[in-house]
Structure formats: C-alpha cells, structure tokens
Image 1 (cartoon, rainbow, N blue to C red):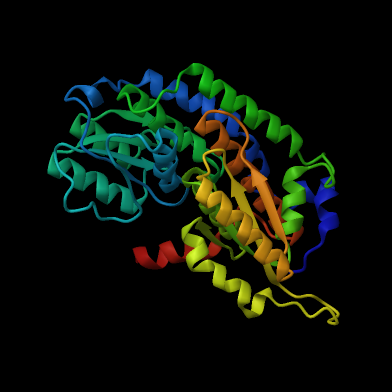
Image 2: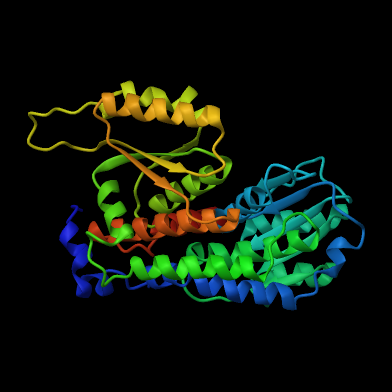
Length: 368
C-alpha cells in the first residue's frame, strides 16, 4: 500500500474506493443530530427524573458508542454535581447500585459487552436508559425492565454514527437538569456539521478541502494527537480511533497537561529523528494539537512550550482550534474534521475505509 495523494481529487476513485459509503456516512452527521434528537424527544424519558437526580451516571458502550459517554461528560462540563463514568467492558463497577443511572448504548443493540452491563444494571435495580437498534436484544432488555428506550436508525457504518448514539444522552441529561441544551443548540450543531460536510465534500479539491488537507498531513507520519482541554482530549481520542478503524493507521492520543509528563519524551526518540540526506524520509512523528477556548492558562503555557520544543527538534506541528460557542458545537467541529480526514487518508492509501476484517475476525474467534 502506497500513499498516492492524487487519488484524493480523483472523483471516480473516491467512489470506487469507498464501496461501503464511509464518506457519505460521515457527511450524514447533521441529519443524525436532528433525527436522534427527535427520537429522544418522542421517547418517554420522564421516568429518569422520577426519583430525583441519580448519584452517578454510567454510560456503557464500545467503540463509537463508548465515546458517547465521554461526549456527555465534557458537554455537561466541570460544574456537574455528579460523576459521569464510561464503561468500555462487560463489567459494571461494583459500587454501582439502585441510586445510579446506567445508560446502555449500542447502535446495533447487539454488542455483547453492553448487553452484559445492561443485564447487570437491571439485576442491581439501577435506573436504566437504553439507546440502540429497535427490535434488538438491548431493546428487549429495556422492555422487560420497563426502562425507557431510544431507537437509533440502522444502515450505514455504525462507527460513523457517533451523533446518533450521543445526542439522546444529551437530551436525557437536559431532562435531568445536568446541561442546558435546547433546540437552538442542536440546530446550530447541525448547521456547523453541514457547513463542514460541504467544505469536505469529495468534489472540493485538496488545497481548499480541510479534510483532504489534514489527511495529507497524517500521511507517512506517526500522529501524536493532544487535546488542550478535556473536551479537546475527547476529540483527540476520537481522531486516534478513527485513524485506527478508517485508515487502518496507528496513532497515539493524550491530554495536556498529562501528555507533557510522559508522551513528550517521544520527541527525543528514534521516530522524531530525520535523516535529511536520505532518499525517503520514512515515517516519523508529527504532532497535532487540538485547542479549545476552555484551555487552562497553565495548560496554555505548557502547550506553547511543547510546540516550541517539537519545532526545535524538527517535528512538524499542526494546531487546530475548535469552532463554536456551546461545548457540543466545539466538539462536533473537531470530531467531524477527524472523521473526514481519516476516511480520506484510507482512500489515499487505496484502503477501503469501511472494511475492518481484523476486528470482525477477532469477534468471530471470541464468539466460537
């Protein structure tokens, strides 16, 4: 597999190289926001607040569904009077009980780990909210427990349905008084996603297309992606995951200031060194810093110093700032850009972004 950037402006190739329709799925993000909000409002969520505010909110999900918990946490913000815990496994923490709310999220409604957590939550008497495929095993668990269920439309690529999985959680949090998120917020998020989808459309050439331009910066590097706030760190995690699944590409992510205490050391390693006399530069580090308006002043100083240190060592640095006012807006702009870029990266390498045969093979072996 070789990197051929000319592929990114070859309209025929972008169609033929993406038989699973990953670009279409990513471009559908705005519709996901509107559809999922409507589905959540049409579901009966009144029981969530009947016994008052829960002690803890636990979000159970894997991959794209798992990041819904992280999104909920940073959208609700630092002043939240309760913890939001994301569980990416088949075990519910031992201290979770009847005073807690468990939100089980699975786009298919068939994810084994999420089903196990939902079943355990019912056994312990927790409040339960299920978000997933209608008519699925997860739907059955919710129905048997008398718990609210928000349907998520099927079709397309599940890992591109991050907003279909996340928006119902934010609607539920608003119902519990944990965040202010009215119709105008979701509409502004959808508008920004539509605008980015237009700028990242396949027909838009690489030099003006932010998704293609970012893919070209990822190519032939080992991306190190840092977020300068908790919100930006969620986007950094999503970027790394999208590069892994869509691009079949390695990437590491971190959050400042923590990343400055450990990952910073890679700037002194072999992948940060370049041989200017070599015919090919080979794969070497490139630092990507995702910035946010809620950056702490101390973190801002650390970010500035880290960027200077990287540049002093010849490590290229890309800084990208979140756009928007509401936390959900800012997060959406960062995540969507990474989703487009990882998809274009795969296509530039001649890889089908939708194909995850290694993941499918692992699941098949585990289920035997």
